[in-house]
Length: 485
Image 1 (tube, rainbow, N blue to C red):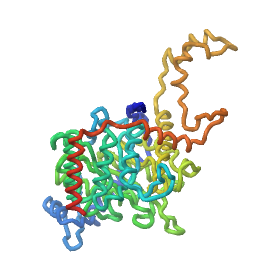
Image 2 (image 1 turned 45 degrees about the vertical axis):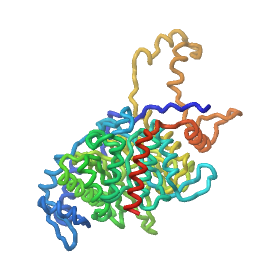
Image 3 (image 1 turned 90 degrees about the horizontal axis):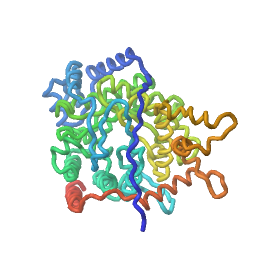
Image 4 (image 1 turned 180 degrees about the vertical axis):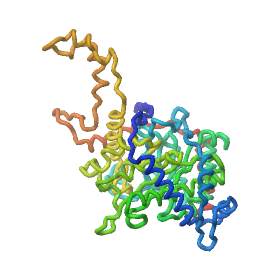
C-alpha cells in the first residue's frame, strides 16, 4: 500500500528588510507621468460596456476611437477605495492567504503550451491531465502558496480555461489563480464554479477561492474580453489583477522609466474602471517588461539589466495597490543549464526585498512556454535558498552554545554532544545538489528533481472535492461547452 505523503505548510518569503530601486521623488515623477498619459493621451477600451461606465462617471470618452481620457482627480479619488490588502481563500482554510507587509507568496508560472511528457519525455502539446498533475505537485510544495494552471488544456478548445480551473481545484486545496479566463460569459461560469466550492456568493466574496489576472495590450489598450470579464468578477468581490507586458523598443519606449509609465497607465486605467463598477473591489497591479533585441527584434525577458522586474513593485505600492511581481521563467530551452540557473538566480531574493505581496513564475522554461515537470522542483530549490537567506538569525544562549564549546574545549570534537544531535539536521538543510549516490558522489540534480516529481505523483493525493461538488462542476463545464464552443 502506498503511504499518503503529508502536505507541508506553505513557507512564504519573510523579511523585514527593504530594497529601494526608486526614490520617493522618482516615484512621484513616474506617477505624474502616468497621470499625464491617462489625461492627455488616453487608453483604448474596445468595450461599449466599459466605455458606458467610464462616461457615466466623468471620463472623457471618444466613441469613434474608443479612447478614454481620465481626469486626474477622478483617478486619485477612485483609487482611494482599493483595499491595500485582502484575503485569497483556499479550499482548505488553513491555506488561505492574507496579503500583508513582510510576506511574499509565490505561485507557479503559466500558461505554457507544450509539455515534456512525464513518461515518454517527448515534447508535445499540453492537455488537461498535465494541468492536473502539476497542480498535485504544486499542492505538495511548501514554496507554492497558490496555484496557476501551468499549461493549457488544449484538448478542450474554447472552454480550456474553465477546464484548467477544474483540474486545479480537483488537485490542490490551495488558492487558484487563472490567467486565461477571459470574457463575461466564461467569467460567469467560473464564478458559478467558485460558488460550488465556497457554498454561497457571500462566501465567495469573503474567501474567494480563485482570482484572475487580466493582461492589457501594449501600448495603451485594454483587451475587450479581459476587461468585460473583470467587471463581472469585480462586482462579485473576486480579486482581479491587471498585468501589463510591454516590450521596450517595440510596444513601449526603449527607456525603462517611459516603459514603466506606459504600462502603469494601462493598469491604473483598468483599476479605476473596477472601482467605478464596484467600489472597494480587490484589485492588484502587475508589470512584467521584456526587451527587444536591437539586432533582431527578438523577445528577450532576461537581459543583464533586470531592474525592470523590481521597480514596478514600488510603483504599485506608491499608488497604494498590492503587487503581483514577476520572477523565474527562464529563456533557456531546458532546465539544468547554466542559463536556466543564472537567469533566475537572484529573482526570489530581490523580489521579496522589494516587498511584492505575491509573485508568479516558477516552473516553465523556453520563455514561459514549455513545461519540463522537473523544472518546478529546481525552481523550488532556488526558492528555498532565497527563503533561508532572508530569514533572520536568532542569537540566544541555545544558539551561542557557550557551555558546549567550554565542554569540548581546544582540540576537542563536537560530534558526541547532545547539542549537536539536537541541531545538526536543522543547521544543515541539503539542497538538490547534495543527493549522494551509492558511490558517495553527488547525483545530477536534474535527475533528482525528475525522480521527486514521480515520487509526489505516486504518493501525494490532495483531499478530493466532495462527490456532489465534482458532479456540479461537470454539469457547469458541460453547460459552458454548449454555450461557448
